[in-house]
Length: 465
Image (cartoon, rainbow, N blue to C red; front, top):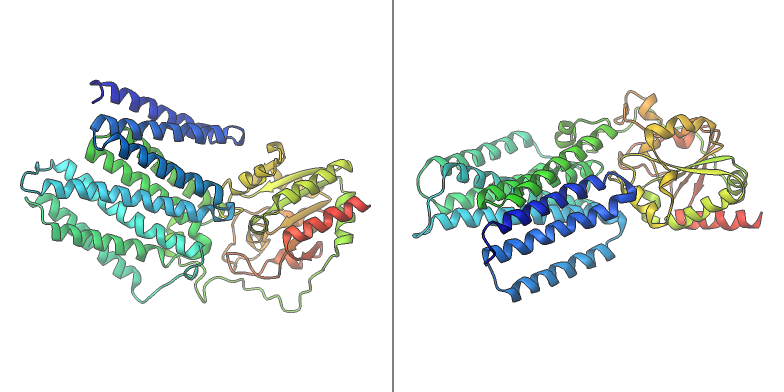
């Protein structure tokens, strides 16, 4: 047993590490250090909790650290950046499941013959932790399945779906209130509430399209934090309350950032069934429009002698793992006397910061990464805007077509550059499922093919000039 009063002091240190770590995540220069700092705080909190409460033996503690740490290390090393949203969804689900198990265990323990009756405030937090943890668990797994394409990414709807969801929620609320106000603990009612909460988690996520799934993941991340905070109140663990509150608030902030970047309200994301059959799509037709293709040789000439090239990375670049080749191309442009900047949209690559991390893997200087609001005024003086795998975030329909589902969405204004080269595998639409007006623009040239292969060809061609 630890000396009395020592555990709260160490918890305070852990909480301070969490806060400082999150603060350092604001800058790419300090993000890695901030992540390590927060991880250290969590490790300290876990070890102190186990030692202070004498829950299990040292052998089990060490085994848990080795197995959990090994699994985390394997995931960090093996999961590709393109699959990061899926991994976040899984981790959210596990966090919600842990909160569900802890809250459920405390409730059922109180109902045993020798159990201590729950205070009403503790019972309320147990019901909240159970409910939020349950919907986080199943909702996160559905999000994972959609993003991993193990189930259709299209919205799944049925008649009176919202009404049915509302009835399920009201039933859950009624059962929770009953368990708070009525003396005694009936396991059957508790299990019924858990089952309905797990079902509601599925029902809330299946009508959301794949394009909106990253927002849902950020929201579920917030849910997992709130559930953890509720669990902290249940077991009177201060560091769990602090950590849960930080995760809950940061998840909401991230959700808000992503909604603004897509010009969507959170309610529209959750209940709009964006991308469903018959929903979405521009009122404009591509019939009669032509696409200008460009050869590798011509594209290389433009890039080699450009004074300013603005590269717009997108999900296609991430899928092709072409970040190292694009940096090599940028180095060649610099060598020829040109300037290169990278235009970063908040939701490029599915989630905020996704492109920044991907390009950092290739040692691209942070100074070259420019956010949307700062880079848009610079497009008119760019000789070439090189779009690599980006789609919806550069679609002029967001400004020009009031009938488009992305109308009003902030975009990178690449159409204002002197010329634009778009690198794509095909003319297929992006996540929004609509045609991109940029592809038919008079200043746009299309270079079809795998991004990594095309970039390697451009590098070889520039070297031969």
